[in-house]
Image 1 (cartoon, rainbow over the protein chains, first blue to last red):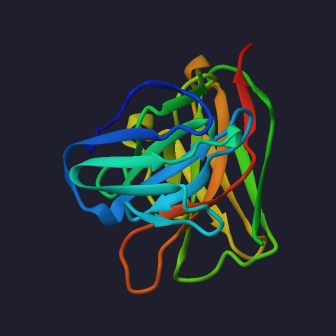
Image 2: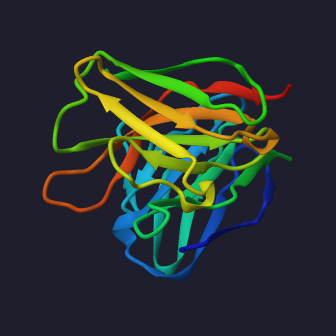
Length: 109
Length: 121
């Protein structure tokens, strides 16, 4: 089973700052299978980035993804109030078919 | 734009079976590019994939308690989780999995709003 470990657990930043969120896999994975989601309070998760770095439809270019092997990163520049949420990375493939990281909460400082 | 809506009882007694349905609207369930999944989230915790509709591909952590059926004629897929305990209390989401043509990866591009299920006597 691929285990995804996200860090930090909570990230406290101010609007306008840059956020860097990490997702580390327990073994090397293909970047094709690494996805990021955003979940605002009381809402369902929302697709942000798939295939490590491809933004989903309607996602602004302040969001970017990168990485390979075991280390993947979600970067959010010029934080807006609506960006403060929980972010999850996800891996597709293997058993179970999908695994999620435990999430990083991005909170307003 | 396709939409997903979960429905079913909000309260289930311990040892009984949890049954939920996801209705897909404004779009077809058919197509090589799509599969359909259930995911759950206990209050204040992270996301757990439960299983994929119409396959035997379910999360081993649920120890064979899961059946996910699909009825494309009704644009629905359904979750059955047997022998529930308080640990199964969660928000349950259904989601569409999308596979781009010529690639072998999926991601969840459309989600339902979620439905809360509490297991309690």
